[in-house]
Length: 339
Ligand SMILES: Nc1ncnc2c1ncn2[C@@H]1O[C@H](COP(=O)(O)OP(=O)(O)OP(=O)(O)O)[C@@H](O)[C@H]1O
Ligand SMILES: [Mg+2]
Image (tube, rainbow, N blue to C red; front, side, top):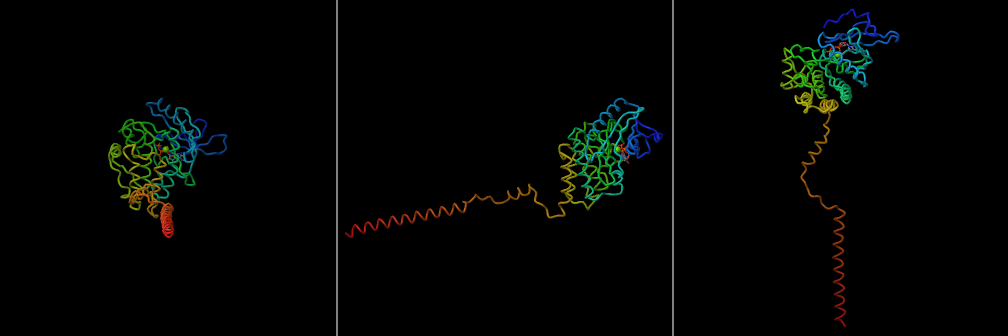
């Protein structure tokens, strides 16, 4: 989409647009200021409505923007305001300066420590949103931004709309970005929090290997891979990865939603263990301790040593008492016969 750069120097709603920060598939993002509010710089996303389906797009955008603006989490990019002005929809966000995860991945695979740190932050943000009934719908490296200190922020919650993305002409009704799309997303089904977890799995795969798990010459070919293709072993692309990472990504990218991780935090925890457990002496897991215990030959519990001692003492006393009784009987007999 070609955005009209005449917007620079003009205004959208009460905001003055100063410069262009970037261009996405459906919008332009601008550096903006609110006159009378000092010099605080903001980021404003301006979306032009498609010619068809305008009312539905508008309604959906405003509903999602309202939900998103209520999310408050240290790793969700804050939305300060949203609205409509002269046929354009806009979303006002915090301005951050550390670039996107897409730019980081373009420089090659990330170090495991960086991946673990980013996933921990993004996972917290995603579980928080899911707990409030908000599904992201378009997780991808372009929608993970960094501040100057390197902290990650998840952005663009829920504003992807059917037909916005690459491949929409070949797959009408498709929402999101085909390279990161879950199998259910490819089938055009209702998305759930678990769909976001699959998509996050694709992003983690890409961070660790520098490549996408599923590729193809057309969007439909990529979708076919999501639907039926086995997950390529990430260690083929990055042999430095520890072996446990393969199983973690297999589970994150399971075709069946019920076979995936239940939360972003459990995905993040499993990846951390896979990345770090191999280099240290392995900590026995609860399951392994239970297994080891069940492998021991089963012996009936013996008597307690104290109880044993008590039984022996009692027997000795009984023998002594019997001997005394015999001695007394013998003495009585001797005395009787001696008279
Ligand atoms: N809050 C922000 N602060 C600074 N730069 C931003 C901000 N939001 C977006 N950008 C920049 O604008 C670019 C375009 O963002 P936008 O969300 O429109 O596109 P996208 O995420 O690449 O694609 P899509 O339209 O599918 O979401 C980003 O890649 C980023 O460089
Ligand atoms: Mg975006």
